[in-house]
Image 1: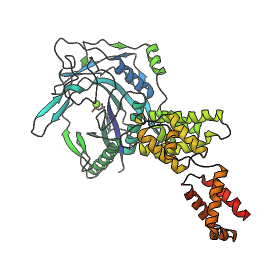
Image 2: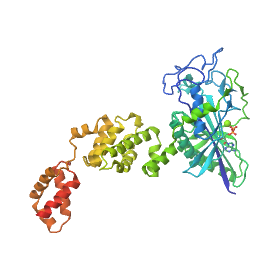
Image 3: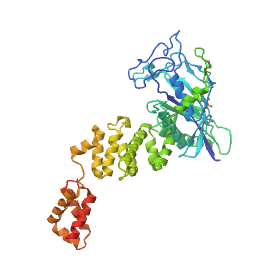
Length: 488
Ligand code: ADP
Ligand code: MG
């Protein structure tokens, strides 16, 4: 029998807001000192009351709109009751019956061509963090308790690990583009749980599902899915039953490991949060947020291809990060601006070159966690350098050197070129005297060339370049050299 995998995701993302979900304690994921960003509200002291953080609500709605979901005109917070040491109130404020967003979809383009339907997106609060130290003590840091947390649940529409990976990475880009979340998986700002089951191909019902947690990247998510598909298929082929359980991904062993088999359904005793009013959102309010939705990564990529003639891969690479793409566009618009001033050497032709610098040299220089925001020079500086190159005022090699220097210490390209003496010499007079000198010194090579040995020209040009200490424009000196040799 052939089997088919069925996969659905539950994704949590910590929202980027100034303060926590229901109080005025700062929401600072980078705070390293424990239990600093806390107050009586997020510590669940008796007599305190929660207040809804509107910024968080807006970010959930933005996410819903970015995924073409339905924004509920009526929504409500509910209490999810359970005990755990990282949960000071003894309940989590979440949403059950009336989430902010239902429906919506994200289309896959690379791993396969299909839509993954979104079931719902709701808003809740995060828990504190438990730290189990080496001596067997457990410590609690409540800085994270009460941080706005968004949960997105998909329909079980995935069939492969690669689909899960593409979805996760695209969602991550969207969340960053709209400013909803930093969404770094390694920092726990985005967490994914994968539900996987297997069924006989062609059937409609669902098999018993296994939930995999503890996944730190989308690559691992894809690996975990592929592993589970194989494990479950082989178990079924041996005639075994799949046990409903939670498993964890062990990256060292590249396998999932059973963590706990699912107890009977939890009873969280959900009920409407009595300390918060239900929320009604007007059409105008939703429209206003819609108008704040920026151009999304895929739309930007498509526009770069159409507007600037970029190749698909390069466009994708540049559009991946909003600030990087913005910087690229600023450089390009500088170049186009220049075309109006000096139309005789069109800078529009520089776009393919600019693109290759961005996807090559610049991305390489930006490694080690640096982002385009850390860069020490402006798009104007960058465009200026590219224009010198286009106008043959500096060589390719010199441009690379200048870019490296600008990257380290910032600064104006013309100053750096002055300082390093990298201006390319193109004026015929000074190049001619160099060429003449070289011919004088290398009479044999000149004779060889006259006798038909083409390669000698290259040698003579090379000598002239050396004499100019690399500053001669190689094209110009070649032309001059050829002319002089013909006259011999
Ligand atoms: P639970 O109540 O156990 O959390 P839900 O119905 O809320 O289950 O679904 C949670 C996630 O699991 C969703 O992403 C859903 O698409 C997915 N899912 C549900 N049933 C299955 C199944 N049989 N196989 C794979 N994924 C499933
Ligand atoms: Mg669930």
